[in-house]
Length: 267
Ligand SMILES: Nc1ncnc2c1ncn2[C@@H]1O[C@H](COP(=O)(O)OP(=O)(O)OP(=O)(O)O)[C@@H](O)[C@H]1O
Ligand SMILES: [Mg+2]
Image (cartoon, rainbow, N blue to C red; front, side, top):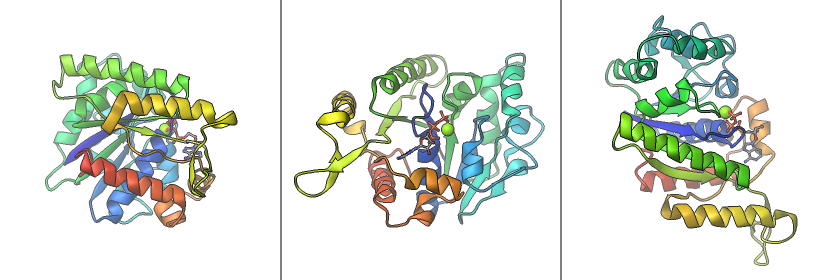
């Protein structure tokens, strides 16, 4: 069982989009996949078509349910979900008053009877709180997602320093294993193909993308282009590989999955 966190200490980076779409692509490849929604906004839960779940991640973190108790099937074969809901906001506050709160998710995952899922993807909230910390403590691998703009790149730096602290305190092997540049505007290039804008209004993204690629080298995946298909698929509560199987943005996520597999981040 591979446990992968998708985290960034900046909101609206494209984390949930990566979790849902990479999870659905892994499931399409035949893996048993569990997506855990750790965010009170419950965007992964909504995207995967689950409304009014009986049990949620809150119940698990309050030790009132196990992962198998809260597991629900989704619109995608082989893709399972631990849903979230708005009461995660209260749960995060309560966690501050219990013993070893940051270990609860790791312990709950260890208790999954074997054979567990092949892949567990943790969709973290866009802030550093006890839930993001528990996700990092429970994870084998960490992926971050960043829009190539200065604000987002600062979020990656903050995550890097948090991961370093978690590595010193809990998991010596923990590090950021990959960076996905996301929501990158595309323009038609001289060769007739689409690519990141390098001049005019889009140049600022190209500069930040180049910075990200220079800093992260082979850990920087190919980018996810900006596409209306993404919010559209969310509204349809269907992952991109089912909503728009041949769309270029779906191909971006497929290429990223293959890239992450080569890096041995994804199984
Ligand atoms: N490739 C894309 N093209 C266009 N819009 C996108 C793309 N990826 C994500 N978005 C939109 O950007 C917004 C943020 O995306 P997403 O929810 O995946 O980010 P997040 O990092 O999970 O945010 P949060 O920190 O709020 O959880 C959403 O409205 C989503 O529809
Ligand atoms: Mg999100």
